[in-house]
Length: 340
Image 1 (cartoon, one colour):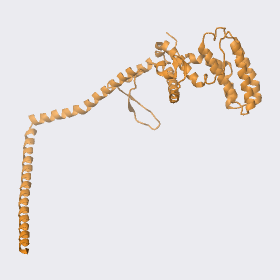
Image 2 (cartoon, helix red, strand yellow; image 1 turned 30 degrees about the horizontal axis):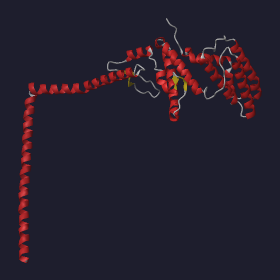
Image 3 (cartoon, helix red, strand yellow; image 1 turned 120 degrees about the vertical axis):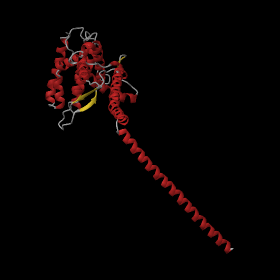
Image 4 (cartoon, one colour; image 1 turned 180 degrees about the horizontal axis):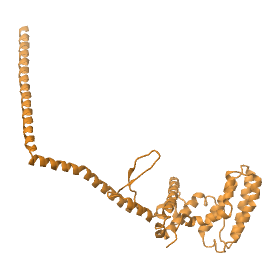
């Protein structure tokens, strides 16, 4: 049985975490949050240089020789270190002295180590936190793609899925800004801010798929009990797609919609059909049919007579109106004739 792959096994963090652990990164972060004073920093900086030498002198000659990503990680890390040192003190002279001294030491140390074949030039735009986020995302995506079947079938799959989804969402937000500038960050031909969807296509965790498949109902709906402090009742939610791939998600959604439609028609029309059939049976094969016919004929007769009376009244009133109108016209004409 293959060993479970966890977030800690993703290649982008292995070297970087090792650098942080060996080069006293946590101490520097604490100094940034809680400035200890110039004397403490003056004593700490030589310790940092000593730890850099100790760590890299223990590495084999081939360590950085043929790994371009490790070299970039080293640049990301050293740029971060120097930027934090610059932010330690508001005194420009002190800040410049600390930052300039540390930066020159690192540049000279790595540029002279030809065995590593990795120079550190402090190009801050090229080695910014956003560039590192993209670089790490591409590296981990490649790793996941090569071990997809193992990752999808182990217990740590969901945590890896959530980690990658979070990073992808952050990169998409950064891409919106770059779209407005029409200038996209790019690490290599296969790693660009424009190609996030093709770089990482997602994973489908077998454990989650199995759990959802077991809980799904006949009509494609599953019930989730939400126990909040307010005591909300259980609610019915449509199951999410069991796949990260668009075409699979569409098929799953179509099936759920069709199932719900069929259930709706069954609930509405089957009772109506039953009532109609039962009424037809009563009308044809029981005394109720005869009684209904007699009642209907009586009502129809009454309505017809009422209508005839109204029609007769209408015509009678019309005739009276005509007579009155004719009489008035006669008198008016006679009066005018006499006057003339």
